[in-house]
Amino acid sequence: MNLKYIYFSVFLGLLFSCNNNNKTASPGLIGYDTLQYSESFGIAKFENYDQLFYCNQNDTIWSIRSDEKLKSTPKIVVLSSVFAGFLEGINMQTCIIGVDKINYYSDSIILQRFRDKTITEVGEEGQLKLETLLALKADFVIGSSYTYNNKALVKRLQASGTKVLFCDNFKEQNPLARAEWIKFFGFITDQKNKADSVFNVVAKNYNQIKDENASRATKPLVLTDALYQDAWNVPGGNSYTAQLIHDAGGLYVFADKKEFYTFPLNLETVLSSASKADVWIHVNQFKSRQQMLESEKRYRLFNAFQNKMVFNYNKRENLSGGNDFWETGVIRPDLVLLDLTKIMSMDKNNYSSLYFYTWLD
Image (tube, rainbow, N blue to C red):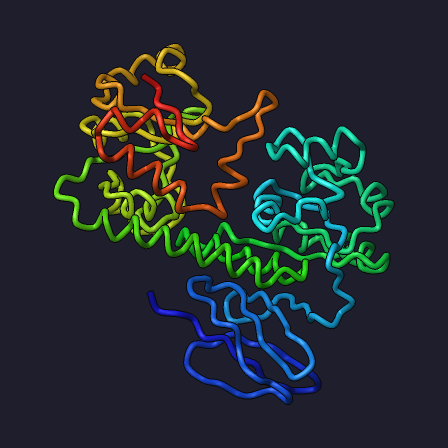
């Protein structure tokens, strides 16, 4: 993979830009932490501090310096269980004092802290409880660009001492690029070495599994998702899901759709393209093949359904609907890949040891 080089320039103070082909040194700049996969953020090292910056379309959207009164245990509000997963990965979930909606979470420490009233629900993005947020006096609110672009909200929070950061790591289509965002969370919690260590192990495991799968002689044809409100949303051929399928030794049915975004198709179109698929994964909310038939009888027309080769990522889902796939799965794509590798083996003896996935037999 070609790595992205990120550089600085100075004009009327420190201005940032992300470019691929040139470098202009900034005063006191020593160098850069090497990011192996992410193309969205970088860390520059200066004489007296480090600076992390988030880039979008060659512009720096926000940055934060290590000398900006960063605490080793900052008070953090997360507006997605994905962000909580990164903090869990470096054992810093006790920094979390606010979440969007507790039913989205599965980590036992977070759930217990909510029961103990040391974690507060603040509402989902677009419906945030501003007064509740302000009362928490958090050091950071971490959300998506949706919240960050609410300038009035950001201004109020910043005036109270809360810094708003957005983490659109979902835009990274390489599974290891998404996982590398753990370094951002390590930066803001003063756990850089821990974050680096966790990521290095994940990357090593992932690439080893991927390399072993590359030489597989037989590659099963793979279908994903299911109907949702009359539309079958399939990931593009360059998407995160498609990359996982490829690295697990499978052939994605819609690999020819080269984009990374999702395509809405009707059932007839999917049936004509994927009725012969060997494996079917990520079937929305379904927990059994019987539930699938009750929703749509034509699911029985797919070979994967008939052959009982249907799988869903709900093995680690709790009674409230919190699913560890969305927490741990993002920072541990090596575990996801190992599951998918077992599924692609077509050996049913492997299915009892799946970590995230359930075999809907």
